[in-house]
Image (cartoon, rainbow, N blue to C red; front, side, top):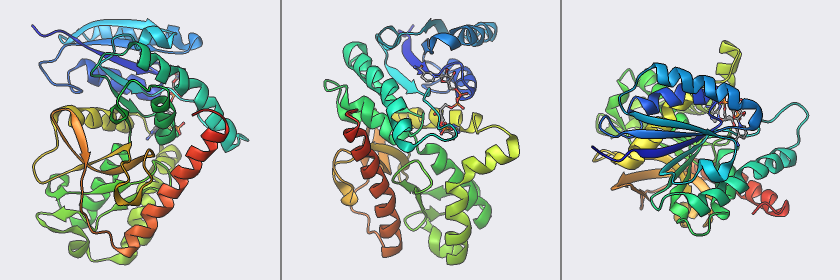
Amino acid sequence: TRTPVNVTVTGAAGQIGYALLFRIASGQLLGADVPVRLRLLEIPQAVKAAEGTAMELEDAAFPLLSGIDIFDDAARAFDGANVALLVGARPRTKGMERGDLLEANGGIFKPQGEAINAGAADDIKVLVVGNPANTNALIAQQHAPDVPAARFTAMTRLDHNRALAQLSKKAGVSVSEIRKLTIWGNHSATQYPDIFRAEIAGKSAAETVNDQAWLEDDFIPTVAKRGAAIIEARGASSAASAASAAIDHVHTWVNGTAEGDWTSMAVVSDGSYGVPEGLISSFPVTTSGGEWSIVQGLEIDDFSRARIDASVGELAEERDAVRKLGLI
Ligand code: NDP
Protein backbone atom coordinates (compact mmCIF):
# COMPACT_ATOMS: atom_id res chain seq x y z
CA THR A 1 0.00 0.00 0.00
CA ARG A 2 1.14 3.54 -0.74
CA THR A 3 2.10 6.05 1.94
CA PRO A 4 -0.67 8.65 2.33
CA VAL A 5 -0.11 12.08 0.85
CA ASN A 6 -0.49 14.92 3.38
CA VAL A 7 -2.91 17.54 2.11
CA THR A 8 -3.23 20.75 4.17
CA VAL A 9 -6.37 22.82 3.62
CA THR A 10 -6.81 26.25 5.21
CA GLY A 11 -10.22 27.83 5.77
CA ALA A 12 -11.44 24.25 6.03
CA ALA A 13 -14.71 25.21 7.73
CA GLY A 14 -15.72 27.64 4.99
CA GLN A 15 -18.02 27.18 2.00
CA ILE A 16 -15.32 26.19 -0.48
CA GLY A 17 -13.70 23.94 2.10
CA TYR A 18 -16.99 22.12 2.61
CA ALA A 19 -17.19 21.19 -1.07
CA LEU A 20 -13.46 20.64 -1.50
CA LEU A 21 -12.72 18.24 1.34
CA PHE A 22 -15.15 15.57 0.16
CA ARG A 23 -13.68 15.59 -3.31
CA ILE A 24 -10.14 15.31 -1.95
CA ALA A 25 -11.10 12.45 0.35
CA SER A 26 -12.83 10.59 -2.47
CA GLY A 27 -9.61 10.50 -4.50
CA GLN A 28 -10.40 13.15 -7.09
CA LEU A 29 -7.47 15.42 -6.20
CA LEU A 30 -4.60 13.00 -6.63
CA GLY A 31 -6.07 9.82 -8.07
CA ALA A 32 -8.21 6.82 -7.19
CA ASP A 33 -5.21 4.86 -5.89
CA VAL A 34 -3.65 7.56 -3.68
CA PRO A 35 -4.50 7.60 0.05
CA VAL A 36 -4.63 11.04 1.65
CA ARG A 37 -4.28 12.40 5.14
CA LEU A 38 -6.06 15.71 5.68
CA ARG A 39 -4.57 18.46 7.82
CA LEU A 40 -7.13 21.20 8.36
CA LEU A 41 -6.21 24.72 9.44
CA GLU A 42 -8.79 27.12 10.82
CA ILE A 43 -8.87 30.20 12.98
CA PRO A 44 -9.68 29.32 16.62
CA GLN A 45 -13.36 30.43 16.37
CA ALA A 46 -13.93 28.08 13.43
CA VAL A 47 -12.18 24.98 14.77
CA LYS A 48 -15.43 23.59 16.14
CA ALA A 49 -17.11 23.92 12.75
CA ALA A 50 -14.10 22.20 11.14
CA GLU A 51 -14.56 19.36 13.63
CA GLY A 52 -18.14 19.04 12.41
CA THR A 53 -16.97 18.75 8.82
CA ALA A 54 -14.40 16.17 9.93
CA MET A 55 -17.21 14.13 11.52
CA GLU A 56 -19.07 14.15 8.21
CA LEU A 57 -15.93 13.12 6.36
CA GLU A 58 -15.56 10.23 8.76
CA ASP A 59 -19.20 9.28 8.18
CA ALA A 60 -18.60 9.11 4.43
CA ALA A 61 -16.21 6.18 5.07
CA PHE A 62 -13.89 7.07 2.20
CA PRO A 63 -11.50 4.16 1.66
CA LEU A 64 -8.68 6.55 0.65
CA LEU A 65 -8.95 8.85 3.68
CA SER A 66 -6.38 7.67 6.17
CA GLY A 67 -6.73 10.44 8.77
CA ILE A 68 -7.85 13.96 9.62
CA ASP A 69 -6.09 16.38 11.96
CA ILE A 70 -7.34 19.86 12.82
CA PHE A 71 -5.12 22.79 13.82
CA ASP A 72 -5.37 26.46 14.63
CA ASP A 73 -1.64 26.88 14.25
CA ALA A 74 0.00 27.20 10.83
CA ALA A 75 3.36 25.71 11.84
CA ARG A 76 1.71 22.45 12.82
CA ALA A 77 -0.82 22.40 9.98
CA PHE A 78 1.87 22.61 7.28
CA ASP A 79 4.26 20.18 8.96
CA GLY A 80 5.00 17.47 6.40
CA ALA A 81 2.50 18.86 3.86
CA ASN A 82 2.88 17.56 0.32
CA VAL A 83 0.01 19.61 -1.08
CA ALA A 84 -1.32 22.84 0.46
CA LEU A 85 -4.60 24.44 -0.57
CA LEU A 86 -4.76 27.94 0.87
CA VAL A 87 -8.46 28.74 0.83
CA GLY A 88 -8.96 30.80 3.99
CA ALA A 89 -8.49 34.52 3.45
CA ARG A 90 -9.81 37.82 4.73
CA PRO A 91 -12.68 38.86 2.47
CA ARG A 92 -13.23 42.49 1.59
CA THR A 93 -15.97 43.90 3.75
CA LYS A 94 -17.96 47.11 3.34
CA GLY A 95 -15.91 50.25 3.66
CA MET A 96 -12.60 48.37 3.56
CA GLU A 97 -9.83 50.05 1.58
CA ARG A 98 -7.60 47.97 -0.68
CA GLY A 99 -4.62 48.65 1.58
CA ASP A 100 -6.54 47.26 4.58
CA LEU A 101 -7.47 44.17 2.59
CA LEU A 102 -3.88 43.54 1.53
CA GLU A 103 -2.63 44.16 5.06
CA ALA A 104 -5.17 41.75 6.61
CA ASN A 105 -4.16 39.09 4.11
CA GLY A 106 -0.49 39.77 4.69
CA GLY A 107 -1.15 38.82 8.30
CA ILE A 108 -2.44 35.44 7.09
CA PHE A 109 -0.17 34.56 4.16
CA LYS A 110 3.16 35.70 5.64
CA PRO A 111 3.07 33.27 8.59
CA GLN A 112 1.72 30.55 6.31
CA GLY A 113 4.64 31.06 3.90
CA GLU A 114 7.04 30.88 6.84
CA ALA A 115 5.38 27.70 8.12
CA ILE A 116 5.61 26.09 4.68
CA ASN A 117 9.27 27.09 4.49
CA ALA A 118 9.97 25.60 7.90
CA GLY A 119 8.05 22.36 7.83
CA ALA A 120 6.48 21.31 4.54
CA ALA A 121 7.70 18.24 2.67
CA ASP A 122 10.38 18.65 -0.01
CA ASP A 123 7.83 18.08 -2.78
CA ILE A 124 5.33 20.67 -1.46
CA LYS A 125 2.93 22.13 -4.04
CA VAL A 126 0.90 25.19 -3.02
CA LEU A 127 -2.32 26.45 -4.56
CA VAL A 128 -3.73 29.76 -3.31
CA VAL A 129 -7.51 30.15 -3.73
CA GLY A 130 -8.23 32.87 -1.14
CA ASN A 131 -8.44 36.35 -2.64
CA PRO A 132 -6.64 38.41 -3.76
CA ALA A 133 -5.19 35.06 -4.79
CA ASN A 134 -2.23 36.10 -6.97
CA THR A 135 -0.89 38.59 -4.45
CA ASN A 136 -1.58 36.33 -1.47
CA ALA A 137 0.47 33.66 -3.28
CA LEU A 138 3.25 36.21 -3.83
CA ILE A 139 3.29 37.09 -0.12
CA ALA A 140 3.49 33.43 0.92
CA GLN A 141 6.17 32.68 -1.70
CA GLN A 142 8.33 35.61 -0.59
CA HIS A 143 8.37 34.22 2.94
CA ALA A 144 9.44 30.75 1.86
CA PRO A 145 12.95 31.39 0.48
CA ASP A 146 13.99 27.73 0.75
CA VAL A 147 11.07 26.45 -1.35
CA PRO A 148 11.42 26.78 -5.14
CA ALA A 149 9.24 29.71 -6.24
CA ALA A 150 7.62 27.47 -8.85
CA ARG A 151 5.83 25.56 -6.10
CA PHE A 152 3.62 28.58 -5.32
CA THR A 153 0.66 28.98 -7.66
CA ALA A 154 -2.69 30.77 -7.61
CA MET A 155 -6.00 29.67 -9.08
CA THR A 156 -7.33 30.92 -12.39
CA ARG A 157 -8.73 27.51 -13.31
CA LEU A 158 -12.25 28.56 -12.34
CA ASP A 159 -12.00 31.46 -14.80
CA HIS A 160 -10.61 29.01 -17.36
CA ASN A 161 -13.51 26.60 -16.79
CA ARG A 162 -16.04 29.44 -16.96
CA ALA A 163 -14.54 30.54 -20.27
CA LEU A 164 -14.68 26.97 -21.60
CA ALA A 165 -18.35 26.74 -20.68
CA GLN A 166 -19.27 30.08 -22.31
CA LEU A 167 -17.34 29.29 -25.48
CA SER A 168 -18.84 25.82 -25.75
CA LYS A 169 -22.37 27.28 -25.52
CA LYS A 170 -21.63 29.92 -28.14
CA ALA A 171 -20.03 27.47 -30.57
CA GLY A 172 -22.50 24.67 -29.88
CA VAL A 173 -19.74 22.17 -29.12
CA SER A 174 -18.81 20.11 -26.10
CA VAL A 175 -16.15 21.56 -23.80
CA SER A 176 -14.04 18.53 -24.65
CA GLU A 177 -13.65 19.80 -28.23
CA ILE A 178 -12.02 23.06 -27.06
CA ARG A 179 -8.26 23.26 -26.64
CA LYS A 180 -5.69 25.91 -25.76
CA LEU A 181 -7.89 28.43 -24.05
CA THR A 182 -5.96 30.86 -21.83
CA ILE A 183 -6.69 33.13 -18.89
CA TRP A 184 -3.97 35.79 -18.67
CA GLY A 185 -3.09 38.02 -15.72
CA ASN A 186 -4.83 38.55 -12.41
CA HIS A 187 -7.74 36.56 -10.93
CA SER A 188 -9.83 39.74 -10.85
CA ALA A 189 -12.16 41.67 -13.12
CA THR A 190 -9.15 42.67 -15.28
CA GLN A 191 -8.33 39.05 -16.24
CA TYR A 192 -8.20 38.35 -19.97
CA PRO A 193 -9.87 35.17 -21.26
CA ASP A 194 -8.18 34.61 -24.63
CA ILE A 195 -9.81 32.66 -27.46
CA PHE A 196 -7.42 33.85 -30.19
CA ARG A 197 -5.00 31.03 -29.51
CA ALA A 198 -7.77 28.53 -28.72
CA GLU A 199 -8.97 25.77 -31.03
CA ILE A 200 -12.35 24.14 -31.56
CA ALA A 201 -12.11 20.70 -33.13
CA GLY A 202 -8.64 21.66 -34.37
CA LYS A 203 -9.59 24.98 -36.01
CA SER A 204 -9.12 28.54 -34.71
CA ALA A 205 -11.79 29.24 -32.08
CA ALA A 206 -11.87 32.98 -32.79
CA GLU A 207 -12.41 32.33 -36.53
CA THR A 208 -15.01 29.64 -35.87
CA VAL A 209 -17.03 31.98 -33.65
CA ASN A 210 -16.22 35.04 -35.77
CA ASP A 211 -18.15 37.52 -33.61
CA GLN A 212 -16.06 40.36 -32.20
CA ALA A 213 -19.09 42.06 -30.60
CA TRP A 214 -19.91 38.87 -28.66
CA LEU A 215 -16.28 38.56 -27.64
CA GLU A 216 -16.00 42.11 -26.30
CA ASP A 217 -19.49 42.77 -24.95
CA ASP A 218 -20.55 39.33 -23.82
CA PHE A 219 -17.84 36.69 -23.43
CA ILE A 220 -15.09 38.70 -21.72
CA PRO A 221 -17.36 40.53 -19.23
CA THR A 222 -19.44 37.39 -18.54
CA VAL A 223 -16.34 35.38 -17.61
CA ALA A 224 -14.81 38.22 -15.59
CA LYS A 225 -18.00 39.05 -13.68
CA ARG A 226 -19.37 35.54 -13.25
CA GLY A 227 -18.63 35.53 -9.52
CA ALA A 228 -20.90 38.53 -8.94
CA ALA A 229 -23.65 37.01 -11.13
CA ILE A 230 -23.59 33.86 -9.00
CA ILE A 231 -23.86 35.83 -5.76
CA GLU A 232 -26.82 37.68 -7.28
CA ALA A 233 -28.58 34.45 -8.30
CA ARG A 234 -27.67 32.16 -5.44
CA GLY A 235 -27.52 34.61 -2.58
CA ALA A 236 -24.08 33.23 -1.73
CA SER A 237 -20.76 33.19 -3.52
CA SER A 238 -19.70 30.34 -5.76
CA ALA A 239 -18.27 27.52 -3.70
CA ALA A 240 -18.65 24.11 -5.38
CA SER A 241 -17.39 25.41 -8.73
CA ALA A 242 -14.39 27.02 -7.00
CA ALA A 243 -13.68 23.75 -5.19
CA SER A 244 -14.01 21.85 -8.47
CA ALA A 245 -11.51 24.17 -10.14
CA ALA A 246 -9.07 23.71 -7.25
CA ILE A 247 -9.32 19.94 -7.75
CA ASP A 248 -8.71 20.39 -11.50
CA HIS A 249 -5.70 22.68 -10.89
CA VAL A 250 -3.86 20.27 -8.62
CA HIS A 251 -4.90 17.17 -10.59
CA THR A 252 -3.52 18.70 -13.79
CA TRP A 253 -0.34 19.89 -12.04
CA VAL A 254 0.35 16.39 -10.69
CA ASN A 255 -0.89 14.31 -13.62
CA GLY A 256 0.01 16.45 -16.64
CA THR A 257 -1.81 18.26 -19.44
CA ALA A 258 -3.02 16.34 -22.48
CA GLU A 259 -0.89 16.30 -25.63
CA GLY A 260 -1.87 19.29 -27.80
CA ASP A 261 -3.57 21.18 -25.01
CA TRP A 262 -2.65 23.46 -22.13
CA THR A 263 -4.33 24.93 -19.05
CA SER A 264 -4.32 28.24 -17.17
CA MET A 265 -2.40 28.63 -13.92
CA ALA A 266 -1.11 31.70 -12.13
CA VAL A 267 2.62 31.01 -11.74
CA VAL A 268 5.78 32.97 -11.04
CA SER A 269 6.74 34.86 -14.19
CA ASP A 270 10.14 34.36 -15.78
CA GLY A 271 9.54 37.47 -17.89
CA SER A 272 7.64 35.61 -20.63
CA TYR A 273 5.22 37.70 -22.70
CA GLY A 274 6.45 40.90 -21.10
CA VAL A 275 5.13 39.96 -17.65
CA PRO A 276 7.66 41.32 -15.11
CA GLU A 277 9.77 38.60 -13.54
CA GLY A 278 8.55 37.48 -10.13
CA LEU A 279 4.89 38.45 -10.48
CA ILE A 280 2.43 35.58 -10.01
CA SER A 281 0.37 35.91 -13.15
CA SER A 282 -1.86 33.56 -15.13
CA PHE A 283 -0.33 32.05 -18.27
CA PRO A 284 -0.93 29.23 -20.72
CA VAL A 285 0.85 26.38 -18.97
CA THR A 286 1.64 22.74 -19.73
CA THR A 287 2.47 20.29 -16.97
CA SER A 288 4.44 17.06 -16.95
CA GLY A 289 6.02 15.00 -14.18
CA GLY A 290 4.63 17.33 -11.51
CA GLU A 291 6.23 20.45 -13.02
CA TRP A 292 4.67 23.26 -15.03
CA SER A 293 6.11 25.30 -17.87
CA ILE A 294 4.80 28.42 -19.55
CA VAL A 295 3.92 27.79 -23.20
CA GLN A 296 6.49 29.71 -25.25
CA GLY A 297 6.48 31.46 -28.60
CA LEU A 298 2.81 32.40 -29.01
CA GLU A 299 2.16 35.43 -31.16
CA ILE A 300 0.08 38.01 -29.33
CA ASP A 301 -2.22 40.27 -31.39
CA ASP A 302 -2.72 43.93 -30.38
CA PHE A 303 -6.23 43.39 -28.96
CA SER A 304 -4.91 40.72 -26.61
CA ARG A 305 -1.69 42.61 -25.82
CA ALA A 306 -3.57 45.62 -24.41
CA ARG A 307 -5.73 43.42 -22.19
CA ILE A 308 -2.83 41.32 -20.91
CA ASP A 309 -0.86 44.48 -20.13
CA ALA A 310 -3.78 46.01 -18.21
CA SER A 311 -4.22 42.97 -15.97
CA VAL A 312 -0.48 42.56 -15.43
CA GLY A 313 -0.30 46.28 -14.59
CA GLU A 314 -2.82 45.69 -11.83
CA LEU A 315 -0.68 42.84 -10.47
CA ALA A 316 2.37 45.11 -10.42
CA GLU A 317 0.37 47.71 -8.48
CA GLU A 318 -0.72 45.10 -5.93
CA ARG A 319 2.89 43.98 -5.54
CA ASP A 320 4.05 47.57 -5.03
CA ALA A 321 1.28 48.09 -2.45
CA VAL A 322 2.26 45.04 -0.37
CA ARG A 323 5.91 46.07 -0.65
CA LYS A 324 5.05 49.51 0.71
CA LEU A 325 3.20 47.87 3.59
CA GLY A 326 6.35 45.87 4.36
CA LEU A 327 4.55 42.57 3.67
CA ILE A 328 7.18 41.35 1.20
P1 NDP B 1 -15.26 30.73 1.06
O1 NDP B 1 -14.86 29.35 1.43
O2 NDP B 1 -16.50 30.95 0.26
O3 NDP B 1 -14.06 31.46 0.28
C1 NDP B 1 -12.72 31.38 0.75
C2 NDP B 1 -11.82 32.25 -0.06
O4 NDP B 1 -11.80 31.81 -1.40
C3 NDP B 1 -12.21 33.73 -0.10
O5 NDP B 1 -11.03 34.50 0.04
C4 NDP B 1 -12.79 33.89 -1.47
O6 NDP B 1 -12.56 35.18 -1.99
C5 NDP B 1 -11.94 32.93 -2.25
N1 NDP B 1 -12.41 32.60 -3.58
C6 NDP B 1 -11.63 32.44 -4.66
N2 NDP B 1 -12.32 32.15 -5.74
C7 NDP B 1 -13.60 32.13 -5.36
C8 NDP B 1 -14.80 31.90 -6.05
N3 NDP B 1 -14.83 31.65 -7.32
N4 NDP B 1 -15.94 31.92 -5.35
C9 NDP B 1 -15.94 32.19 -4.05
N5 NDP B 1 -14.83 32.44 -3.36
C10 NDP B 1 -13.68 32.42 -4.00
O7 NDP B 1 -15.32 31.65 2.35
P2 NDP B 1 -15.95 31.37 3.77
O8 NDP B 1 -16.05 32.72 4.41
O9 NDP B 1 -17.10 30.46 3.72
O10 NDP B 1 -14.82 30.54 4.49
C11 NDP B 1 -13.56 31.03 4.75
C12 NDP B 1 -13.01 30.27 5.91
O11 NDP B 1 -11.65 30.61 6.05
C13 NDP B 1 -13.69 30.56 7.24
O12 NDP B 1 -14.04 29.35 7.84
C14 NDP B 1 -12.60 31.28 8.04
O13 NDP B 1 -12.66 30.98 9.41
C15 NDP B 1 -11.38 30.70 7.41
N6 NDP B 1 -10.12 31.43 7.53
C16 NDP B 1 -9.05 30.66 7.86
C17 NDP B 1 -7.82 31.19 7.99
C18 NDP B 1 -6.71 30.31 8.37
O14 NDP B 1 -6.82 29.09 8.20
N7 NDP B 1 -5.62 30.83 8.87
C19 NDP B 1 -7.59 32.62 7.78
C20 NDP B 1 -8.75 33.34 7.39
C21 NDP B 1 -9.97 32.74 7.26
P3 NDP B 1 -13.67 36.35 -1.94
O15 NDP B 1 -13.74 36.77 -0.50
O16 NDP B 1 -13.10 37.39 -2.83
O17 NDP B 1 -14.94 35.74 -2.43
